[in-house]
Image (cartoon, rainbow, N blue to C red):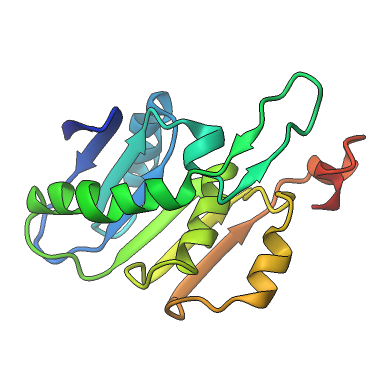
Amino acid sequence: MTSLTIEQKRVDIYPSAKPGSPVIYLNTFSNAVNSVYKNLMALGCPDFCLVAVSELKWDHDMTPWYMGPISKHDTPCTGGADDYLKLLLDEIMPEAEALLPGAPAWRGLAGYSLAGLFALYALYQTDVFARAASMSGSFWFEGIMEYVCSHEMKRKPDCLYFSLGDKESSTDNPILNVV
């Protein structure tokens, strides 16, 4: 594993054992990266490269536009996804892929919660990802369903994985319970 810092983002690169393996970009929390990778290896996943980006400004980097706080103790989402995607495409990906054993077979994008929302949103902004995974994606985010229904993805992904949590629908928060 190699770690880089690019514009205050931590980038952990787990190269594959063989050239030409797929690369998955995972937006996550830094304390989760090692356990995610170890669990995937323990499950016997096919060989792949993992590039985990952390130390994100979660409510900014992962959100496509401004949305006010969803509760009285929450902070607003400030809509920096386009800027973060540009950083990912223009700086993080080239530096990370220069450290991999050959060009990737394909690229995937994955994330949990707001990072799952970002993974979906990114497919509407760029064609570089052949696959995406949105785990418990924040599809309660104001305007995202209207956006998805009124725009086209830049590339039809080979595979798209979604999972939803089971607690949002039972919450008293009217924003979250639409999930």
